[in-house]
Amino acid sequence: MRIQTTPFFLSNPHDTDDASAANVKRLGQYQTNHEFDEDWLQDLIHTHPSLLPSREIEPVYDRLIPVSRELPCPSGYLDNLYVTPEGYLVLAECKLWRNPESRRKVIAQIMDYAKDFAGWDYDDLMMAINQANKTKLDNPLYEAVTNESDVIDEIAFVDQVSKNLRLGRHMLLIVGDGIQENMESLTEHVQKHMGLHFTLGLIEIGLFEFEDKGMMVIPRVIARTTLLERAVIRIEQSGTDIQVSEPAQQTQKTSSSRTTLSEAAFFEKLPENNPAGAIWLQNILPQLADIGITYDVKKTLILRYIPDGETSFNLGYIETNGRFQTGNATWKPYELGKIDLAYEYLQNFADILKNGSFVKNDKPTECYVAVDGRTLNISDIEGKDAEFINVISNYITSLKKNLID
Image 1 (tube, rainbow, N blue to C red):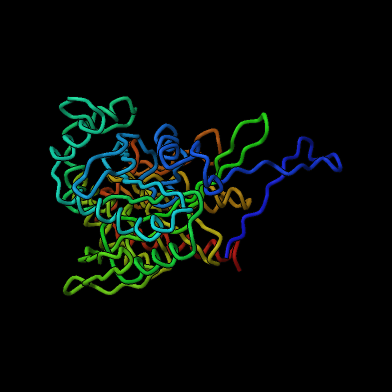
Image 2: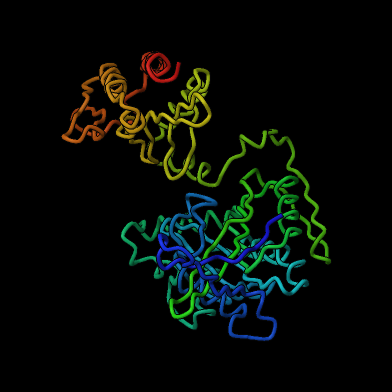
C-alpha cells in the first residue's frame, strides 16, 4: 500500500524551524475545478514528453517525440502518440482516477488502440496523423523526427515503423494522477497470463506546487510488463475480463528470462548489420553463461560479471553494428583501486586477435582494445572462441583473487 504524504519546502536546510509544508496539488483533488482535467494532462505530456519516463520502462524508448493528440482510430481517439528517432511508437492514454468508470476501462481501451494499430499499414497511420494534426503532409511521422540529430534515413524509418505495426510492437502507457491498487493488480494479471509484443506501463504524475515558485512534476513508473511471444487476446464487454490463448509450441520461460523489447530489437538489428558476427554472438553467449557471465540489453548488449549480485564488472558492450567497445571494462576496477586487473584483461584480449592492440590514453579509464587501429568488431573474434573464453576465465580468476575473496 502507498500513502501519499505532504512534502516540505526548505529554503535553508541548515536553519531550524525552517520547514514549511508545501502546497500540494494532486489532479484527482480537483473534483469541480476543470483547470486540471484530462485535456490539460494530455497537453502537458505532449508539450513536455520528457516527463514520461519511457526509458525506465524500455531503454529502446529513450527519447519520445510528440506526433499527435486525439489521433482517430477505429476504436476511438487515442490521447497521445509519440515516436522515437528509430521508429518505435508510444501510445498513451491519460486518465484522472477520480472517475471509477475510467479506471475499469482504461487498460481495455488502450489495448483496443493497440489492436487498431496492428491492423494498419504505414499509409493508414499517415492518414490518421494528418487528420489529427489537420495537415496534408506526405510523411508526417518522419517530418516529426527530421530535426533529431540521430534520426535514421527515411526508408529505414518507414521500414521500422511498418514492421512494428505489423508485429503490434509498441509501448502502451497509461498516465494518471494516482494509479489505483486494483489497476496494478490488473496489470500484473495481464503480465502473468499473456505475452504480447507490446510493453505496457503505468505512470503516475504527481503535481507539487510551491507558492510563487512554480510547479514540480514528479512522474513515477508504477508497473510495467515485459515482452514475450505473441498471444491472442480477447477483451469482454465489461472491460475487466481478459482472456488469453497462448500460441502453440511456445517455449516456456521463467520470469527472469523474459525478453524485453530492447533485447528483441538488438537481436533483430545485429544480423542485418553484421550477419557473421550475429552468429558468433549467438554461439558464444551460452559459453559465457557457463563461466558466470551475464548480459543485459539496453541499446547495446553489455557483458557483465556480477559475483555477489551487486558489484558489476563490465567486460565491454556490443553495438548493433557489431562494434565491441571495451573501454567500460576499466570503470569498476578503477573505482576499486585495481585498474591494473582491467589493463591485464584488455592486453590479454588484444593478444589473441590478429593485429590487435591495447590502446592507452591520458585518462586511465579511456583504454580499449583495437584491431588495425580501429575499434574492435565481434567479427574479429571469429575462430577465437576458446581463446576468448580463456581470457575471460583468467580475468574472473584475477578478480576473485584480488578483489572478491
